Image 1 (cartoon, rainbow, N blue to C red):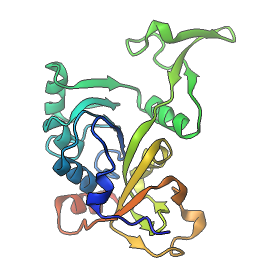
Image 2 (tube, rainbow, N blue to C red):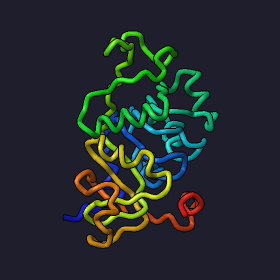
Image 3 (tube, rainbow, N blue to C red):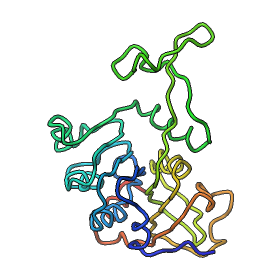
Length: 231
């Protein structure tokens, strides 16, 4: 069954107040076209989960600057002066996690578990004392799994059934997020017929994907950025 959808149909699945995971590691793997459509449709009260905040005027930063986002869960925002200002003035709530912890929280959700134990950041301000327990004679912190209503991801190639392939650092978060959300929307510049992608080279199987959108990244700043980072 084909999962191809128009970008308008796909993004209309995102409700107001949703928790939305956004793939990407900096620009590579960021679903710029899906984010542009989310900006156009105007859903509000969103919680975004992304490794970084992109740069000002780019990617998720555009949604945040437009006031559509109440909370950002991330690892760093240092490349985006505007988001730093919004955090400091209280107009945006930001929750920080070490990069590996954020990835593991997402992976744990996709694996069907409720959380995991770690000693990372145990004696730092990122740890709530209420989350610290004794386990096998050691103090450890309980980290809960992180789920989402929707995941927006960029795939280098996809087939009509929704099997996805990624390139370069898009592999860092996209496969994890595709397993941790109820609705998974993938954009790709290369939409192919089923059977074109060799099964053992599929990074995200179609079972995890709700909709696939064909996008044109040629001749725009996002396409050039993808070409620069994805050999």
